[in-house]
Image (cartoon, rainbow over all chains, first blue to last red; front, side):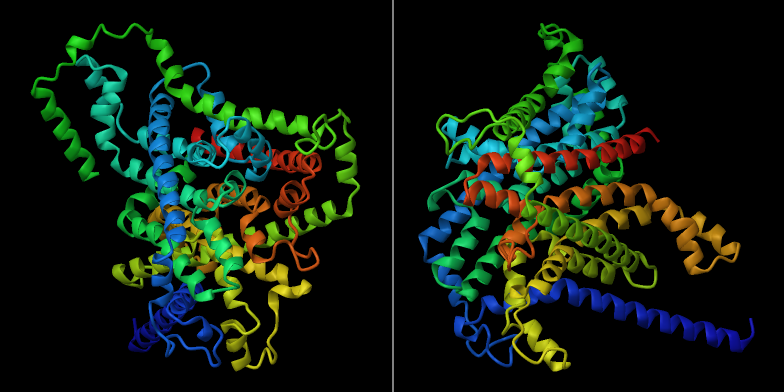
Length: 285
Length: 320
């Protein structure tokens, strides 16, 4: 290569790299800009929300909106409800999905393929179509306005993809493990519990995070299947905050920050497991 | 992989210590071949109760005159369907849903692919890439309610978006984006794209990383330019993933309710009324449960058509 071409190549690379960083930053502004504004607004006084010119850190900077929320037992209750429902749904989903996925992954049985088709297909059913009849069912079963009503109905959303993800994960574990355990006389459940599950942490984490996120974030069922404020979850509570105080934007944003915190923290802790588990389910069912 | 083999060693080591497994060998009275059915039974029962039965009930609702509100509903055949299918508001909701879905799906795939490509480059350090990856995934972790509220704040006539647009001279007055029929749909679309693209980015990034570098090497040896490599290597390799998540996105987007409901409530003047908000309003605001059931069945049928393609696609992936 002549010196001239080397210079040209290096210059080209510098341009490429600059362009790359500009694109990366532009993307970051698009993705995180609104989030930064949410944080900024949560720490303003409500009078400063639409101050002109807008400031990232207002003169009224304080955690007042947060303390106002923490001092309101009603708001605390929304969070308690969300945690109760979210954690129970996660536990139930893991339990049911693991056992079902193990059967789908390790056994050949007549109805296996139709069942798989059903589980994939069920994801296509619009929640809005289910909520109308479930509204009647939940009332008839005396589960209206109860934790149980939300917990069971949320399994509709969490189970299908969890079973798919878990099956894909089990398929990636060598069958020789099961055979070895069986030769040693372990039954099906014992093999699953003692041999397979200890090796399945990444899959379990993915399913757990996914289920918690789905139920923590759910709005339509929470809105229609509960009635009194003491049963409302965070997403519904947020909308109540709007009417209640005539747009206390700083409190709405503070509650939004608190509302997404559990999911963000869990994600940061488990992101590696989760990303691989999620895509393994999407790439090969 | 290391953790896997590590645990496996632990397991083989555990075999040495005496496990009381052999004693339980003959305890089970249930024939082996029934085991998988018992294991899958909870899922089947839950789905029958929470999906199968409700759909049957929904079909029944749609064939009666107004149920729930009416104590003794009468069978009216397909009357609810004919009145829904001849109502202009239903077709307007269908049209809005189609526009919303097409624009969102295309934009989310394109944006997801662009971000995934940025994150897949070799010219940026690993830590930098990890940081940007977390930033790019952020919007996906917000529930639709928070997304809608946050963007309502941003798009407020006196909000920060109008301020920034004012700085570059695009907007002079306090423009009410979400209250203007011609703009509200565009705003809702932007919100939905913002909230949804990270899923496609993650999946496409996993796809990009699974493409063998040898393919690109071979293309480069043949003198293929960047765009030729995209066309002859990247897209063909990603095709199954793009089709799969594209169909999934079509399903999710046609069913979107929460985001639109909180952002605009279907307004102004019905300009953002999509099928989700339309059905919800019929059922839980107007208490026309039969009409809502009929339109819900129509949405379900539409979804099932897409679902057939999705299931077939996923099954074919599994075969290969």
